[in-house]
Image (cartoon, rainbow, N blue to C red; front, side, top):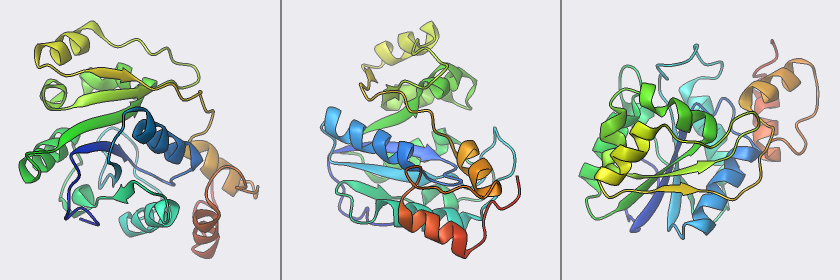
Length: 207
């Protein structure tokens, strides 16, 4: 794990494939950090996401890009707990491990409205919301309504769903990869250091 030896009390968890990380991820993390008065947000690159196709970049490349993207940004950290784990990456395993390692820390899981609606399909979803707060951001094409079962489970365990006020951003890793394959600039879409890394390693050059 990177830079998590001294644990602040209130931590946001932002998981994802980060294939690649882009500016919307950074804005989401910084908005959550500010709005929820978090001590830090930990970016957690997935090892082997179980609900999606194989990733284009290697685990090491995705870790490198996350590290480059958050360098010099106060409150943003990287956590490699899922990259070190063998087999499919399940959020519930990560939440359990982090709460065990940091019992005095209050964790908030950060996600988009699309993931919020889909959360009850996740492995061990009810155990996830029994252990952490949730913070959801609006996404283009999705309302931010939460499934009733999810809200009931949160309330039953004394946890909350926070609605982040950041504006909707029409940006995704799929769009980034498509832009690269078409030879388009990533200016305004991803940090310059990430764009340089992608170019240097010739990532995503095929759609």
